[in-house]
Length: 237
Image (tube, rainbow, N blue to C red; front, side, top):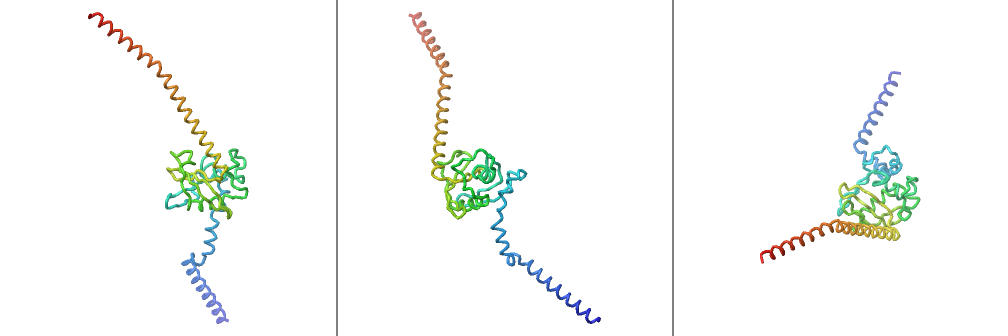
């Protein structure tokens, strides 16, 4: 009986040693043993980002992903807000799937209905590898840089426009930029430039009108001085 008990104990001891051995080996080489799981995690790391940013408690400045380009440097995608910049802004203004009550959605710059936040993030990643900066599409050149290129979204190459802040390198906006969107953009930009020129012209006219009385005073003073000089000359004669 005692021999049987001892044999069972030895069996458990050997099992424990084998178990410990494999734990150590697996712990030493997790990247090798779990490489498929790690790859799967890396591929799906952004899947829930769109749902996360719908939560108002997520900070605006939280970084989602930093994209790198040898020529352009980095572009940082942050959570942002609906009105101005970041993933929230892209989802709110350029998709129908998210922020459905956001009013400022332009039909011409909307992604297809089935495009998700994950598709957009991977689209930016693909886009930023081979985009070019184009000044003529830049509404605010003092603050932003604008890039145009192709993004692979749901297996289709889509021409897109990316806006990046010059100072902090945060992504301001990203949306489809087809011919109609380009035409509307250039027309709006031309209208804005014309309005600015008109404002400058009006200001110049206003400045001139305000300075006109001063000019009249100077002319009167010059006339008075001329009259005084003439009188002095006459007195001398």
